[in-house]
Image 1 (spheres, rainbow, N blue to C red):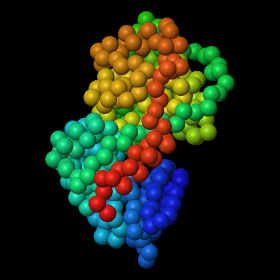
Image 2 (image 1 turned 30 degrees about the vertical axis):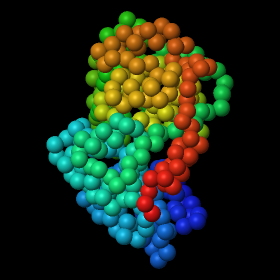
Image 3 (image 1 turned 60 degrees about the vertical axis):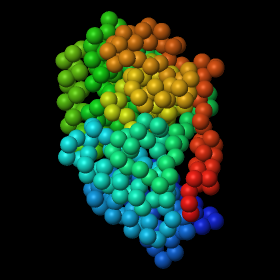
Image 4 (image 1 turned 180 degrees about the vertical axis):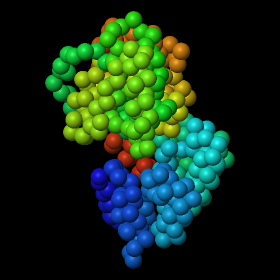
Length: 318
């Protein structure tokens, strides 16, 4: 787990990864301490900052009384949160937006979610998640063909859709690689899922946590990468596939159409009801799942940093 606070010229730039509760605690020590920075930018999802949406909103409201605050919102509330959680999370995000000088989201799709929820920030920026192309590596070793979904396992992440596609495919053996481990609280769901897939003739292999040093190698070793989320906010896994030089099969949605237009040649858009056919085609021609030389992978990290700087200097009333 890593948090980095870079305090320069009165502004805190906050970068997050790893265990959220530990990270937020260390950051709050700075933001709520004796000498808070003049300005701060937070990456926010309610699960990162507290044990409930209500508590997370209170935390950010406290921070906003001590420093000029801008926020990037992640996991924007949407219908998939369910009838109990969606109103609570929507209220939380509305409270956070209300105390921030400005809000960034990572796609026009997420901006539309905010508008649909009636959340209108003082200033709204759209800054896509960056891709950082990895250096070319050794050619992957050939092995049994597999289809992989990258990231935590949880219901709705697209694993079920891939199993259904494999079960209906003529390509054998049928193997799904879960490139990651279960999200907290979904360990039993993964066991049940694996058993149910086996009954349909699909083998599920779970890698567990993949260290960052090994991630590009693992992404390059699979036969067919797939992104099949039911409910997108923004997708770091899609950016990771592209960074690894892969052109994944991506189930079509408002978000994925936006990403296909942003980075031409980096995804294969697939209608949800044609995934089985697309998987079979990609297994028959794995070269189609690699980026061509003319694929557009930008915006890269430097583009993203520049977009934030322009937004902070041009759109925010400090």
